Image 1 (cartoon, each protein chain N blue to C red):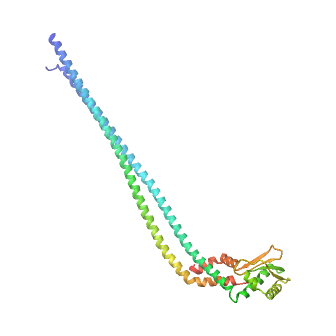
Image 2: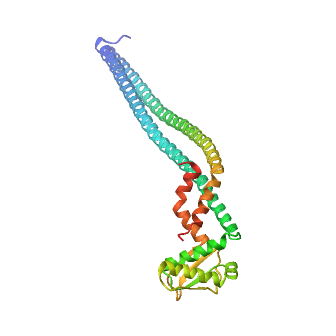
Image 3: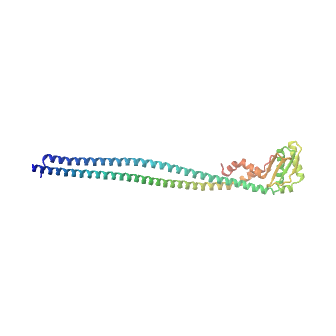
Length: 112
Length: 210
């Protein structure tokens, strides 16, 4: 009987150790699971941050492109204006005399 | 000391269960994490596309607005050039008309203006306002001659009397019925203004061939 009791105590002890070890395994799994979720959350934050950066970068490039296009358009209009204004001035210079003469004639023309 | 077979089975079972549950916990966490990241990537891509499209529309609208403003400014500047040329014509015309008032032909022109004004008013007793120089130089005989010319045309007895008030204009006449009311403004300034209203398009066409 004495021997049997001692065996029983040893066996109970061994089972308790197994339980402790099992708890350790579970705790370790819980920690690793939490770590996995934490890393996933960090990855989500990184993804969102990267998207924000990409959008900001794309917007900046769009604005730069727009500024260039507008500047190019304005430059073309300036060039067109210079050419057109020079043409108008040349025409006016050549034709002003006749136009003035015509206006003066009209003012001086009476019905009697 | 070796355990009895029963106890050993229990011990193994405890450890196997723990291992199995640990694997389940890790598998679930890994799956959740994968799903979380996957959904985040998908949402982020959608967000990225939506925001870029939104900004593209904004930038396009802004660019089109700026280009339209530049176009309007271009046409405004050209229009200003055209208007300046037309202004130049009428300014030069005004200067030549002003110079004409000192020339020999001006007296005859003033005579015709007086007759024209009198005819428009239908004759009668008329008051003539001219500038100071013309008032000092106009002769009574000329006024009688003009009155006769008006009478001939309108078949109405006509008298012309110069106003005491000299007009502040370069030449021409403002004729009115004695007693006020009806008048004809036949000053050079008014005639030029009237010609400008009527002939601006024509002058523009003469200048720019349109």
